[in-house]
Length: 105
Image 1 (cartoon, rainbow, N blue to C red):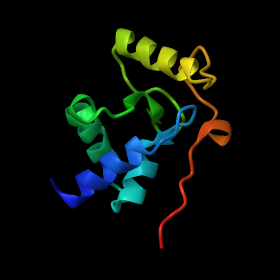
Image 2 (cartoon, one colour):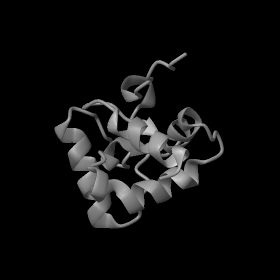
Image 3 (cartoon, rainbow, N blue to C red):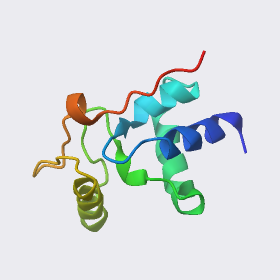
């Protein structure tokens, strides 16, 4: 497994219950600030195999980016079950729920 992929997986696994991160935020912490689309691909391909909390990852606007209605509803419900407030448009207030891990030196 590539180091970037391993970093992304580790970051996503580290998002605590009740918090979210953005694709771009994860990409930057993993070492590729412009790699948000790679984060999407990693989530799509590896969530099940690695038990990733995929539902805690949103777009830069704090919105659920999944277009499939059923998966969109599932993500919204999983977040709400964790105490994250999701509005009727699938948006989360990032100022309140964004997880900001400390960078390791």
